[in-house]
Amino acid sequence: MNESNRNLPIVFVHLNGKVPKYLKLNIERTIGLFPNNRVILLVNTKQPQLEVSDLTIYEFECNEDWYRLENSLDHPKNFRNNFWLISIARFIVLKDFLNSYKGEILHIESDVILSKDFPIGKFSKIQEKLAYPIVSKERGVASILYIRDLESASKLVEHVLEESKLNPNLTDMIALRTFYEKHSKAILVLPIGPSEKHYYRDHVENNLLIKFSKGLKTFEGVFDGNDIGVYFFGTNPFNAKGKIKIRHEVPLNYADVIKWQIFYNPKRNFIDLQTKEDGIISPVYSIHATSKINQIFSIRKQARVLQYRSKESSAKKKIEFKIQIYTKLFIIKIIRKLKFII
Image 1 (cartoon, rainbow, N blue to C red):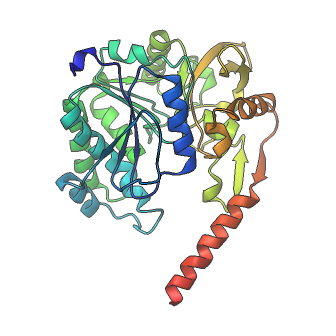
Image 2: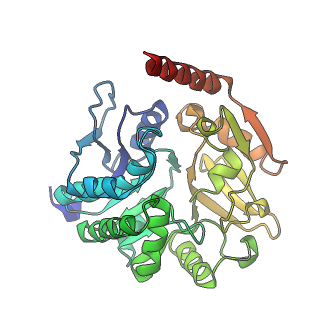
């Protein structure tokens, strides 16, 4: 196939384990929304139970870069299938895929959902070779990560390997932020909200506001880094014994989300972002649904969740408890103890 004639492929990555239900639902929904864009899943373990029509699965085998990174990091390996390693190692997996694909890709994190009018065609037209959100002085986010070519992916991986030697506690978010500091001209910063300074906390840099403004002019909408999804739709209950924190701001992030609100747009079947002070409205093209609750990824149930969360978006902060998740975590804990005893 001629690379120049292909539509931009959408790439998910899942490493060290079975694909969770929410990701399967997300992949199915994405394939339905973008029939002209190839949807690809990169894995490093067999997925015999994963049957999704029109999904391309690429199996990665650990290489020298993977082992170099693993040997440099000092994160606990027993946390969620070596979570800290695989969150960074996916950049290596993306580079490996591009070595055979030879084209541009759009990487979407597993818990990120896209709107049906997601401007996927505009990424190929930007001048920069990479694009992703920057959410704080310390963190970038690969919620949406556009990579133009193998050369760009190689530079990112090279940076990650160098930084991991200097900082054994490196994370993917820190790596993306430090990479931006060194290669800002090569990166289009995806807008995470309005461009006006008073909708962000005091520590936001003016040069980033300029970048946000440029991104808004390019895409005419916003992409969720990890503010909209976390604040309006909740935190990950698997990190807090089944508890979901809703309308709790992310510490140290730029976004002053308390000045934002969302509402459901029936024409888009998705949410729009509106500023409380002057009513500026921007379409939201992606939601980083960190709660990972299956319903928000479901084709049939998603609209109901978006409508419900939109109606309460200006309410006070709260905590919800998911008994099913608490029970699941409790059972996992008991099984681990039994295995240890045995």
